[in-house]
Image (cartoon, rainbow, N blue to C red):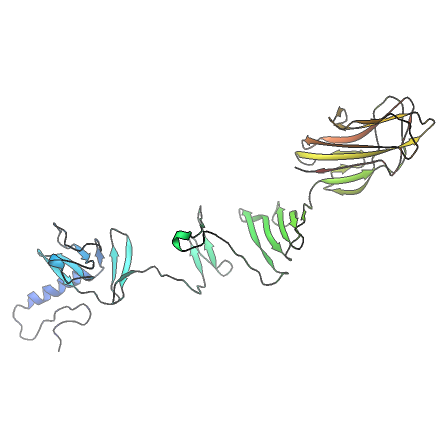
Length: 358
């Protein structure tokens, strides 16, 4: 029969033993030193000069002095002497100066943080993961940084997301109060899309990129092309709004055909152009002018043009083009004028177009 326990090596009280309290107290001393094990340090090779009763250390390799030969064992200062507690596989210890939990694996003390986590069903960081969100994190900042060349890495960092087939969805969902306001990714195809929403249910594509060609489209960009479907008579010497009353296209409904003008839907820089085709009334000696007017009265700088040579009815044309900064609600209209003789701006070929470019 052994005179000590198998794991903690606590001494047994033997039959007919004298001074049984000595053996009992020795066992209590060992239990007190090992149960809920917490050590001050694990890097020392020599005992500290002034230990306090109950101080414990994991002895570092290469120990000398009173700790010689105690490498990786637990040293307990008790009753004015060092007591050696040989480490056994599975012992756990809290390292106070490192705030680290370690375990003895039979060869050394190792951190309890695993080197790899594989095939976890749920992982919650600061919050609770569930079946809908098996990986969940609640935090204010996150950092992904490349492993440097000095660390054995490449210095590069790629974040890869993958979907099964082109018809599936892959993207980032951006929310406010858990209401989706923007989607970024590949939705229903491999075409890259940025879509936005006010209510989380109706979405508008702001940017769409064809993955086969790289061609970028802005489907919601304010843009229009409009024309007049009848000959507009204009007298001599008066700037007159041309009744641009039909559209070939009118994205965002920015062109108001009923009032023959463009209404700015959002602050920004806009590019405009116009074509005015002359049609004779009584004389080909008319001098044809055109311009774009801001809010009905202010000529937009750089938009005015005139043809003063001899006109050919339904052949002589004037082209205008300009760029300008506008504020939401501003209106832009096409105006015409004749000098020397009156005339018409011809139907169908007199047109006005524009688009937001910035």
